[in-house]
Length: 472
Ligand SMILES: [Zn+2]
Ligand SMILES: [Zn+2]
Image 1 (cartoon, rainbow, N blue to C red):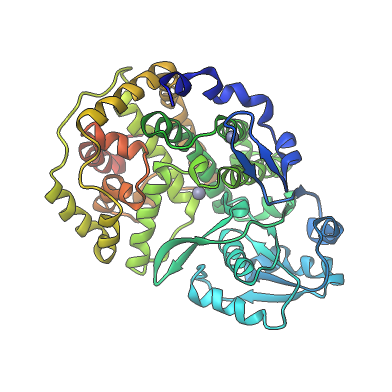
Image 2: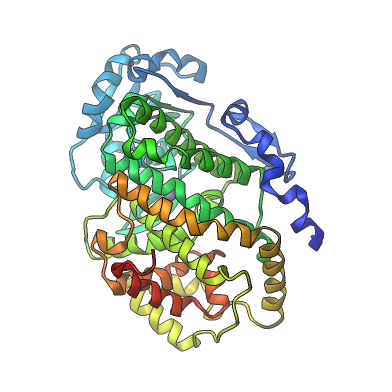
């Protein structure tokens, strides 16, 4: 690909905003579309996304259109049973619903939960219904994939963007692993139920939405630096949805009941749309960047230390605020950072072993001790510099106001904005920023800082300054 292609107007998400709204994307549901922006065929297996009052009571009306008939199993836990599960069971009466209700209060999508559901599917149903948020949906998704049964998702909280996902994050032997899965044929929700979910879950959903601000710039820079597959139309879908959602932050935080319910629907629309964007791209790139890598490392350590984890979106929201402050520190003065030396290879390996413990061999195998150097890095730097001039500095400059805005809104919603609020130490925070990148060999803010030789200094500065309120 020539240089001109990377920077043409066609590669600018704003050129595709006219195709990037919910009503347009809804027309593509359940189909393969040839993309006018990138030329790829984007497949969407989810056929329906619907919101309605009393959705639990009405859901049966939508199912014939999805080709569903026969008997179903409804998967829930004690909380989601109370929130909507009981109603859903009566709403699905003509499908002879059978409930599988998890009672564990530390429910994870792990071997035990997956096996419990699998064993309950003995008298094989014709389809599955998940009634819950991330974990319940993932347990159902993996079993739907393994048993080749269709499933529909009834979302009880706008807490995560994974509802529409086609892959499943599972705990395998205590390690977070991305496994195959199946996207739901339909996603259903109800403003009243979403607004009734715990505030902390809604705050986490808002954190997962915020992450897209970093994910999108990470992705676009990965495209110019490393020629990673990019679709400006999918980027536009995510970008536009996130912008609309940002405007609703006050309603989510302090709105009256009516405004809050409306804002919860918009939050759920945004989370579903970004899930659809991931389905279209076939990767998590449109929705996850350094924000998620910082979060994954915190989570891996929680699991290793048998610590009860926090919500995904909580850690991702923190990762996003840190990502914004890193972009500001790297590019805030309107210039490419000065080149500093890289960490020596033996020291890098020693540190990865310290941070990753039993997972270190895996982390070392999928990464290289040094980032690209010499001619390759010079070429990448030129591309990054051009991209920054064209759109990057403007994008990063906005973080000066967006960062405090996001911090204050998450706080008002009752969510955490600093790792110490979730009980992480200064060292754990440093490790997540400095070594979050080894989770996946993907180009993100963290890689960018590493390539310029700034990463470990920035990680130190941010980890030290955060608890004292010196960073944001
Ligand atoms: Zn495309
Ligand atoms: Zn996420």
